[in-house]
Image (cartoon, rainbow, N blue to C red; front, side):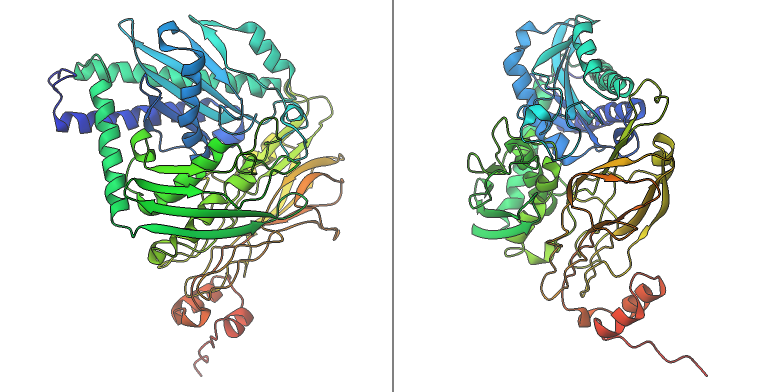
Length: 559
């Protein structure tokens, strides 16, 4: 391809370079996923990766990754620039933080930002984040009463200076985790993926003969902003409200929202939302924004790439001190339990405007089975084991299709394979299967949850750091659809366990987890008879449900 001056690039060249940027950051993300030590990153994709201009504006994000990481990381780069101005950056530098209010919402996510130089000139910034399983403190659960109990708190610091690793910082990180080998490895995997992204960007700039991303950045941001505003312009103007109640820690939490559509975009205000919790389910504002704008984007601008331009017309506010705008030092370790509910809250507003594009409520928040324990003789340099075994419930029924079963929406995180969990821990999975009749009945059915049965494979108790929801307040059906089945956490011996908080599973007993199903949409009697028959044949609903809820009678067998 002929070289093109950065000041005279044609539209086709700009579009090609835009696509290349997305390919660059996807390779960045794949590098992180393939080198990570934590299974939640390596197997499940709990990460984000992106490239930013020198103003801290996100130009492209990897397809692999989670909205909570990507959209909050988009703000964190601006904080890095505030602490490390571009004129102070040098080749070989890298910066790190896990500050929940300047990162991605809790201490378990490390964010690393790396300047990219070409021919000695700073041209871009690469940033990435991933979940680290253990960073000390009380552990990855909601029991803490302030953020300082939740683990090691890293302010904005230089991780690498002109190619030299900050060994003092690395020693501090290793000393403050139960899994020093995994944690150190994850830090290096984050730094490495940024380096790969930077190399690929320089190669791209060499190929196109550009010495700056300024023209491309303006093209990406302007076109994306225009595309979102064009979609918003198709919607009626006005304000709509919705509220949703979820379990909370020791008392229910109400999430109230007012959505306003105007010529300048869509704004969501969370006035009317519950005050902060004394436990770690509070949400920093950046994470609230991340999942709110993701929910809006899914309905309003699903085909527009995610970047600073497409995010700009979608804005969020929450009262200072609300559970969705929790101030430091509020505990926030399990912020995902509340934050991932926000697309459903937003959908409740949008269904009053564009009902044919909005699903019923789903499980929403991840049902991470956070387990921890000791193994005699140690474990590969770590102190026992700790793992977030990701599992998911059903999504809400869609206007024209059933909900998805055992699928993480809105996080997009994949479920942890049983083989990996059994390799990394001494646990045995006796059962992992879809949960029949858990999807809410309707014209379109909610997705099914799943059932898991887990036991220690050694004569040792293991710990459950529970952070589950939708047990007391299951996903609601819509327009006559039935609610999804509520979640259940119990022992095989019969004891019901709390949905949140530290608990122990004794040897010889089994942990049983039943994730919620998604809500149904429309009256069950309107469901196509062929679909009901197929659900019965596939074991997704039983014949009694088909008869009593759907009004279905199977045809008589031929004589």
